[in-house]
Length: 271
Image: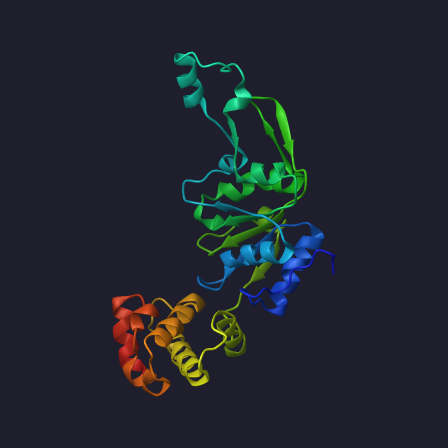
């Protein structure tokens, strides 16, 4: 594909479809929008891409109160007023009080970076639309200093969403989209072995079987994620649990199941 190509790393195993989506987004110079249920590695993907390509990762964590402007720059009027009251030098230099946000930081970087806009759907509905110009044109204007910040190198932009809100069509048109399916048993085994290469075979197989059985229970409210299976296997290894007693005793179940009502359901169904 391109000379800059993402591949799975020692710590992150990606499906062929995900690898293709990442590399298409890089080649087409478009943001990559990643959806998937919690625990499927959406956020970790950005770190894996940065590690694979040898680039710095900048993370913009989106919250319910986040505005698009926060990612561009902030003008610290309070600090300027404070400095003015105490006679600090340079108060007239507004540029001293301009602090770039994460998008601005990515644009100003002397080398190409990976920019993660994490959980974009947490913000209000206007947030994605407010970023359209900046993500298209790779620039923004600072009104206070009358300066245009242009990207020195177009960042590799990865955007995650938990599908809490529908994203605007205009925003979606500008993205490459990929939904991370929950790993099947073959891929899950590969993921586990990247974390625990010496895991005992029967322990892993039995833990995986119980794990997928739990996920298949219709009435369970919060399905356990990949990260919780990995933690559970670690706990089982540390506890010296025998694979043969795993289903009967369900040790350390609270590592995998996190809701009271789910614990009762699992205990009734898995035996």
